[in-house]
Image (tube, rainbow over all chains, first blue to last red; front, side, top):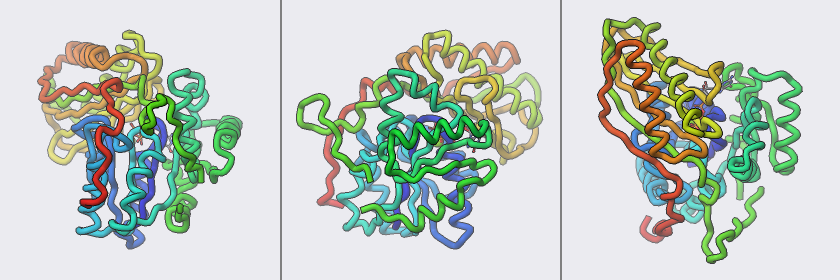
Length: 204
Length: 166
Ligand SMILES: Nc1nc2c(ncn2[C@@H]2O[C@H](COP(=O)(O)OP(=O)(O)OP(=O)(O)O)[C@@H](O)[C@H]2O)c(=O)[nH]1
Ligand SMILES: [Mg+2]
């Protein structure tokens, strides 16, 4: 069971990407389970993902990087004893700190037969400047980007190329070690690269 | 790659994974709406779009610095569903889904996650927006469930997960 985290600030395009990846990877013959952590106890994303016929487990009512960490582990355990998916795609809330989510899972990797795949963090190319200009948000957005193995500059279909270049420069400044790629789930730009990263990257 | 240890900013020797949540709060609700007449798919989409716009405007009136994300799942007319959302700009209201049969009844779940106002205010703003649209379009609303999410209530890892008993 390989864990891939799709993180990033609120509304950056995570669920839209998760649905596309789920469809594509299961279409290629892999078993995929999607774990969605939402702020609310009654999920919106979980319902949307389910509408596309994908296997989804909701972990609601708190943040998996802190409040409901135990629920995450129990869900992973149930998967390991049940359908044993090839890939488990995790969408945390837009407020989650990706490495905190990873830190919850890592100690259980041996027991639950988990391979830690990449953390893919989305940065909305249309909104990043606004977000980084808010005192209250810039730290969160920067922390999320710092935790990325792959930074996906999202919604590139909706911005001019100069805007995309600015987003890329900001992302590289915050995290010079990450792979950076342009993503439009609408046009499929970047999807093959993300799928390749999911398959190839193993994070120690 | 960038797995540096987290800083112990509170100085109490514990890690604080959620220290960045502070200013983001939320309100989640489940409703049944009744329309004054039977609606086709476009009618349901228009309703969803109006709701997103009215709620986004209301939270800004209540002092939010940013709409984090307002998103809703609508079920209607048998197999019909919509995902409606906005990040705050009228131009980015998105409504997509699968067509259902004509209906006057819509079940809707909303998550309204907003920056820099408290959860009770998000609830008030959300309901203000909902009521505005209902009275404009002649809908009635029934609230089935409401929950508030306040970042201040976040406890830092109340209990470490029990790895031994996995
Ligand atoms: N133009 C454009 N818009 C996109 C793209 N991907 C997602 N969006 C839109 O961005 C908005 C937010 O998308 P979601 O997938 O719900 O974002 P999210 O990150 O899951 O949101 P939260 O779970 O609330 O944090 C929706 O209106 C999507 O339709 C894209 O590739 N291009
Ligand atoms: Mg989502």
